[in-house]
Length: 344
Ligand SMILES: C[S@@+](CC[C@H](N)C(=O)[O-])C[C@H]1O[C@@H](n2cnc3c(N)ncnc32)[C@H](O)[C@@H]1O
Image (cartoon, rainbow, N blue to C red; front, side, top):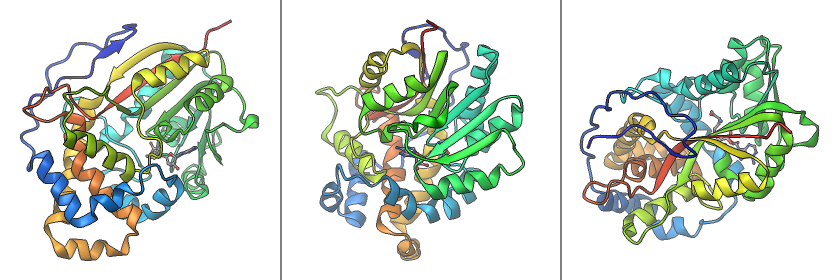
């Protein structure tokens, strides 16, 4: 399948430079139906569906420590990383895990005069630490729901006087956090329960002229042509990652951001750039499904952590769409949104 580069689809404010088409990724090893069958055999889909809507953000991350630290960071990503790599040439490379931080660095440069930057849902601090190293004149604050994540981020930044990490939720943001030129979140705002509360809180934390940058997964608009399997796989992805309210469409986010007084500036579909990472994750997960010895070893991982094998197997179908159907009929997309607070 040949993958198209991301494209601005809304408020065509700026367009990325035209580049060569990405190399084809090759066929997937199973059909989506077969992959769902594999998940059912190991995890019992009916049992998983009973957990739909459960508020499990904290237990999910607590039960996934081994998966992130002993598997993802060790074999695929970089220390402290809890997100997808952005590989703009379509070939998997660990440098891609710094792609989101690079995007924020460009935003800092473009805006000029940036003094304060907030990262919501900063995890173990990879993005903020990277940015603080490159911008000693800017003060960075990282906020995460989990005390353990804020602690680990702090430990990575002991030599960075311009990086500060606090435990707390973005729903809403603590009032005494301060005012920021940029507030950004990487794969975290999808956990928002009340979009309006979160968007209003972000808007309040911004200085006039400030920007919010969101790198995240979004639900594709539903169509009658979406297959039952694609709809089921989307629900399993949401349950697997503990997204209690399910993913929202870009339109739902735009509406909430607008209600909070923010102006849409940039919507860039980055899906094609995370696919090399997703393919690698799927390759690893296939070992889990095909080898009982790997599954036996994985028993030390608690239930919610084990469900990362569900999301890893299904993600390529969800983000690429399925061959034979209309290629635009993906379950979800990965996007970069930039919104700004009016100056006056
Ligand atoms: C997929 S991880 C991404 C971490 C980090 N942004 C990165 O790029 O490595 C999602 C993070 O969002 C945090 N999170 C989820 N809900 C949150 C909330 N309401 N407030 C603050 N952090 C939250 C989780 O604790 C987790 O660290």
